[in-house]
Image (cartoon, rainbow, N blue to C red; front, side, top):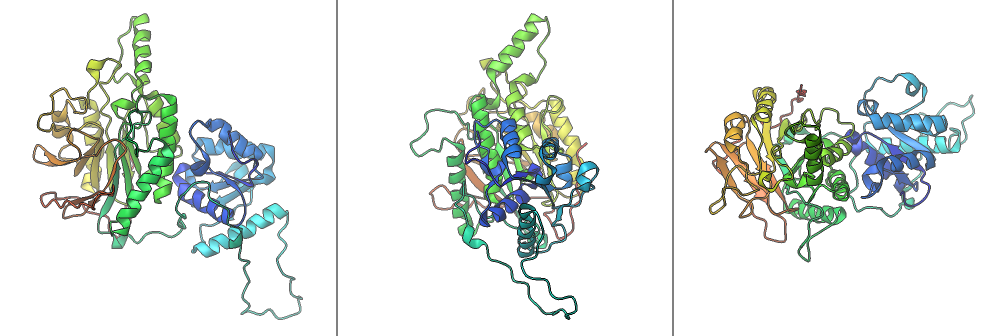
Length: 504
């Protein structure tokens, strides 16, 4: 249920443009307007369709963040068309990227921020257009000069300061940076990865200071990152969550995980396209899997791996998280994901190690399978040839520690398959928590392997052409582990424009 009553603006956008959406919402709210935006207002337990419906109907203006991503978005199309049917006058498209308009959108006047070079100018024209829209006319703030008078070419336009109307924030996030300003990639010498172990929302027996909600965990991670950045560690370029978002894949747990995952990139100033998630065995719904087996039995059919109904709740979360990013796929036909990040020249193989998992206790272990390993080996080849950094992410670790039982549920049973088919394709493998806490190792003396800490814990991993360093911000002294033998063979990003290699 929406909180706070009627809002001035409902922000309709593709998740791929969340940086723009939050920047626009922030400008509007600092000017005294109220906004409704998924990144800040979509809380656990909220029905997404109801949230969208009430936002479109009950807001005074539907601000459309217009881009090619938006035009390809199923839900974005539903939102602007619903607003148009209610009242075409309540639509305010703001173009933030090059896109070809057709149909009804092509005849609606939009605010074009594509050529605007600075945040100050973008803010001025945005608030000016908002004033025109809400006022119903574009009357200038001062009297027009008499036409026979010679205009003063050196006159300076006065811009009214609206900062006195700042509203209290609904959620403690950092001020969004103006998306129109791009980073200078020529100054980049490393890639910084925030590695978060799956939080397993819904698990019991938490320590007294352990965060249990999405908001609490986001706040702790933000504090950890801020602590490290203040000590000189590079801000994260990429967020990796290595499986087990939930404890048992119940809908409430999935909603909590979705709230956490959708809010974390915004909080840390990166886009959702720089968030990587993979499933873990705790993301498997055992009741759904059992029901699938019973349904097959009733029809005299053999259950087919990977028994996809067990991951339907995870797939629902994935679809909501990456809605609008159509190149990111996780479905029954492809239950794993390739994450290309062209501006970093990094590609991440999001491996699914739950392929063998079912509702039966004896199936609670990690397995990738040759078809999946072969698929990634083929897709990673062009990235390797073009010198991209290649990272693998998987829930289950491939290497047992001393004293670890052979049938430990946190272990990958077919580590030999991973090593044989992907060991030469990857520069680094990250995985979820294992026995003995976080550690560095090598698979077959070639592939560097780095495990996560306990559930919900986080580290920043800094990769350079010379090696790797891990930084921990959990109330301890910051620990740096230099690994001389870890060589990142891929070229790190340069000033040259990266070319996106689209997965097939």
